[in-house]
Each structure stands twice: as structure tokens, then as C-alpha cells.
Amino acid sequence: MGVKKSNYLRMKKTLLSIFIILFAATINAQSIKNINWESDSTKIILKYDLLSFIKGNTYNIQVFCSTDGGYTYNTALRSTLGDIGTDISLGRKKTVVWDVFKDVGGLAGMVSFKVVAERNPMIRDFFISYNGSLETPIGLQIGLLGGISPYLSLRGNTDFNFKNNYVYNDIEYVLNYPYETIYFVYGEAVKHPRYSITAGINAQVFSKGFVYLGAGYGESRLLWEVKEFNYADDSLYEVSWAQNNDYSIKGLELEGGLIIPIKKVLLKVGGSLLSFKEPAYTFGIGYRFSK
Image (cartoon, rainbow, N blue to C red; front, side, top):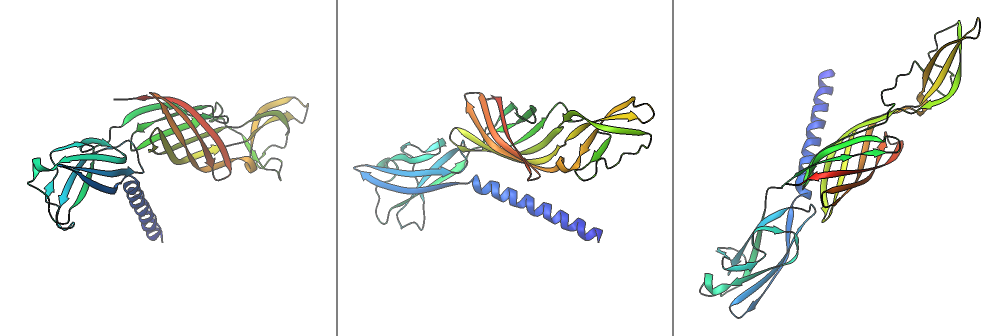
């Protein structure tokens, strides 16, 4: 039974990895659309759209000519000007001007053109950013920017590692109170330890902005002050803390948001959700180390 469960979990992880790879490849793929051309004496003016969901990439562009209606594309355009060659950015109505007679003696038949785009290696920049919220004012996010890139995020507050002696809920006053010679009363102090560790990807889906999505682990606890007294003389024995399990959450933490670059400065706005129960707004400011 344990072997079957282990194989099942490995299969789930493998399928999830394959899905992530295919999804990243799909949204990172470019498309050539709306290829149109017209002749102008000895030149041909060709227009096309170079589109991709992920922005920031540049491409090597080649154009080929066919005179048999697209069955073969044996003629590569060489004597050209415009949006052809290396480091061509995304955009609509890209224009290529071909000086026909410098490459061939003439064109006859069913003329058509094919535009081929090869994506250049993505140049990624390292970044570091403050990453916080009202509940977790201490935070850090580090990663890479460019195309689809990874990041790591940490958030917490000053009480994130605070320990409690007891636990309770709204039905039972204190679940695990062990003493018979000591009694307790709740004090007025309250603590809310909170932290999260997440990782994910960011992608440049706007010409001047990035979207980030991540997941990880988070904890949010509610602690009440507990003052313990001796029954014999009502003297203070100890001040402890009790965790309210009804208002304490741990588990899956999801997050997402926008990164807006202003030159090398990064502004971040987003949100997080702990165990699908506790939402929070997040914000930050960082720096991009451009190459």
C-alpha cells in the first residue's frame, strides 16, 4: 500500500512538472501574423506582426520567398532594410524592404513569403526587494527579471517565532492546562505571530511591467496572555501564552501581484492568501541590477 502511494505521489509530481514546462513553453512562444506585401517598382515592401504573450525577448528574423504558392521557400531575402536580422523586438506592422533584383533576376509565379523568428537568449537581471504587508512588515524578495524567471520570498513579523505554553479554542477554556494548585486568568496582551516562505515565477507580460505568481508555506497564530496564580496566596506564579486554535492557521500560502519598474527602481503591489482563509495585501520596493 505504501509503495503504491509513493508511486502515485511521484507520478503526480512528474505530471505537474511536465505541465509547468509545457505551460511555460506555450506562453513564451512567439507567433508571426498578418504577413502582407506589395511591390514598388524594383522593391517589395513586406509587413508582419511579431507577437508573444511574454515581452522583453528579441528575435533573429529571416524572410524567405516562394514562387510556387508556398510549397517551397528556397529564396532567402538578403538585400533588405528594416525589421529583419538580429535583435528584432516584438511589435505590430514590422516592415521589411527587399531590393529584389539585387538577389534574383525577377519573380514569376505564385509569390508568397514566410517569416521565421528565432528567439535570442534572454538577458536576465538580478533583483532584490523589500516585501511586506501590514501583518508581516518584515520581508525580502530576491530573484531574476526577464522573460519567465524565478524568485524567492520571505515575510514575517517580530513575533514569528514566539512560543506558547498552552492551546485552547472557543469551546474549551484551556485545552492542556496541567495544574491543580495554580489557576489562571487571561491578560490583555495579544500577539499574532505570522510568517511565510514562498517561491514562484515572474513574467514580463506588459511592455513595462511584470506579473509574479508563487506558492509556499505560511503560519498565522493568535496568542493570548495567560497570567497564572497560586491558589494558596493568589501570588503571581508565571506569565505564559495560550494559542487559540480556532483563529490559528497554517498550510498553503499563495501570492501574486505586479512588479512595475521605474528605471532601476521596482515598485511591487500584490496579495497573499493563507489556506484559502486569510487574505492580505502586500507591497514593496526594490532595485534591479541591470547588466
